[in-house]
Length: 567
Image (cartoon, rainbow, N blue to C red; front, side, top):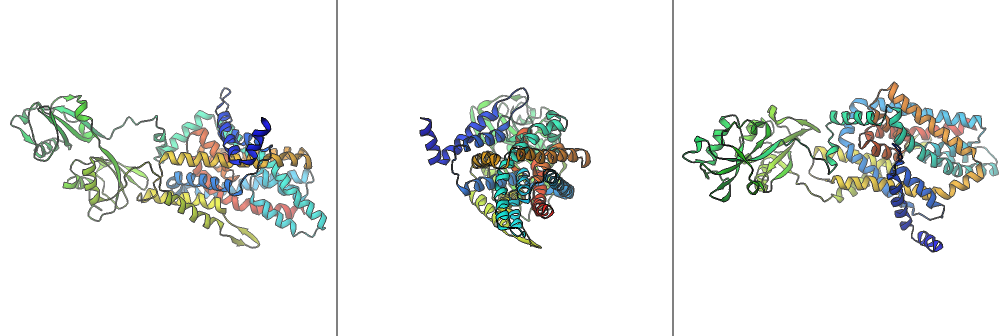
């Protein structure tokens, strides 16, 4: 029976992949006191175990899911990233320079101490620092050395073996140190989570709203029912006079619905309201609390209040409203029965109560009936109607553009430098996510879809790594000796610990940014996912992107320097 299942897994690698992801997530949920492996670490370990069955994996599969993950990360943090870039981008780049130099220095010291040859050292460096690009360029550098053909062949053969042995802990160790122990090294998980939430508030990040179990207690626009008893209504008043009366008393709200003689009506402009009727007033909360009995007592009329209203963001593009004071805009006829819930400008909240000037590119969140919102948005700009569907045209073309950009190679001397297709996908996510925040007329991706792209993309990538590396890990240990594994542990651990210390004590980054910078400086996307899962936030990705780009270049340069020095 077991042999039959193994044959199925070998004949259908996709089945093995889903087995790895499913069991990995199961193990990742297990907790001992405050320690848990997390899904990323657990999936990697299960992948190494399943990989012992010698299951062939499709080459492009890993890259496809990896690019999907990186795009979703970039898309999520694009607006915050470009704001952070103006402030701390240079510091993050310097952090990456120092940490990548530490990675090189530690690997060089180990290689000199243990008298490793250039091939072994190259495999150790690329695996322990999880920088696969060093494999290609290091192999090319060794192939050009003036060595005997047999010696050269032996050196080239050692590179992938040493890489396979050290890459497992290079990935696993970085994930565990940054994801599980990193927050504790920075003052404790609760303290780091609190600091992360504070940074989210500074950046107007409302990622907590993505949890469907959460709702906000604040309702900027409210709908409330009142029984008409005030003497003002003794002779009966049309809706437009009622609204003028309320506005003159400092309560600029709208009459939206009326119950009269047991029947419910929409509040048309000339509909008369009499004593004993029940009306629905809608407006901003700060005005509604000042009604002061201008109408009568508030009542709970479930049937009257149970009707649909929409909340829709509208991008300001029309010249007729640009430069207009918000109070003036609200006086326009097309804004009748339309409330402005909030205003966003360059990703930041603007308080409508302050009566700001409407600017091009502002995003006004309007609340009202579908008819009223459609009419108002035609005068203001573009209405971005919420939907559960993803703009797959946007996703596909954005990743394509990023991949093409990342595949382009720039020669610096004799060294080819590129972001790679994966790095290009990350950059595409950042740019297109930022553009989406500026011009929300295209590229809508629901939060649930982002979550799936992020988690499935990362864990399928990690599972594929584990399955592919499993067999060569054992073979490498036999060929090189167990000491190379110990050397890999040291070469991985020391730079990570140095980076955590440096980000905390020297650069004084926010703890979440420190962990993101460490993951980026080691080009370890799996550890970024682990940190985000631990903190429950995408903020660490802000520290990941700049450091990832800088280290992706520097680690390759350091790899060539390592071969040169040891030769």
